[in-house]
Length: 462
Ligand SMILES: Nc1ncnc2c1ncn2[C@@H]1O[C@H](COP(=O)(O)OP(=O)(O)OP(=O)(O)O)[C@@H](O)[C@H]1O
Ligand SMILES: [Mg+2]
Image 1 (tube, helix red, strand yellow):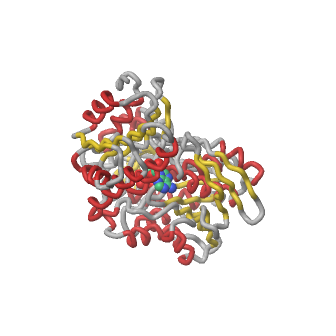
Image 2 (cartoon, helix red, strand yellow):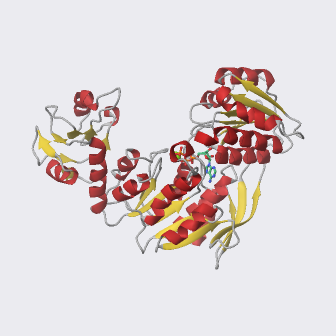
């Protein structure tokens, strides 16, 4: 963070300085985990359901914290507020206001936010100092935390923005107003909370609506609900994707046997052969969106080809393809799942597993609300239609995946439902053969152990 006195901090967040001089300066970062505190940092003492951050003030101070942001005095220099989360947002906004050189890029979508964010960060680092969140820090806590890492040397601030309801993105954009908005897709992720796809589209569109007239909306041309957002802003809209009318178009897409896409990236003046070293057809969209942002923000076309081919997977458990010494190829996409991202992963597996036996270990897809049964069945149907050889459905909640698959009359594969992850690993231990291509996917932690077991070569003996 930029250096701020407690007096400045208190003014920014509407709080009161207690137990210390208003001239005390916070010179470091802002952390709410006392274990991450370093010299000069501000420790934010959140009161959670289980832990009270104020209990960790002594630990934070001995780690070098300059001061505390909390909801009650603890005998050390602090700014006391009513609501730490709101204060964190206000502080982040105050920092943004002091950094006029920043270009803020906001990214939203139902799936692919983190993946696309990681690509945009990698490309923009070639243009100038860039700050982006680790992993999936995309909410009212993670976003200001990321913003507060920016300082006077930062040129680009890349922010993943998640929405679990109406008004969420407007709130996040109020903290860090983007001039570039990227919308990856509108799917059924979190539909349980939203109620309908239309409500999801409406919530995602808040990012585009927040753009200033001189801003830029980078929109997935292949998603009708995202395209339609061009009409919601006076900012310029750039359609990106494989659609014929995309201003930046990924043409002649092919996927090799590592699931790695190649395509020709074209605009009205350029044509560039792109070979990605990332797996999955969805990386075509993600990388083209990232290329659009980078080109707009100063990466020359001449540097784009190598830059795209050097993109790497940054956040774990997302289409992480690795070969085991025994000849089994694993696609670890276990970070999270919804019907769209599972479809993308199954297509990738079909490409990687051409001519090989394909085993798909699929767990429960969370947060589908009224679409729960249909969503799971749809995934099972697709797995069968794509000719998966063995389907291992993990946990009773995921059973409709099995139902969807076995309902495909012409499917020659087999499906089993296993009770949990341990049973899935046991099944794999007995059934896997060298040469198999195994996809592991489910909602959060539901299939992580299976992926981890496959990573540890000793667990599954083939
Ligand atoms: N453009 C895309 N379309 C569909 N699926 C995608 C796309 N990009 C990534 N995915 C897949 O979606 C899953 C989630 O990816 P990622 O973590 O990037 O999404 P996210 O939007 O950040 O998710 P979250 O809401 O959990 O933060 C992964 O399995 C990933 O491979
Ligand atoms: Mg994410």
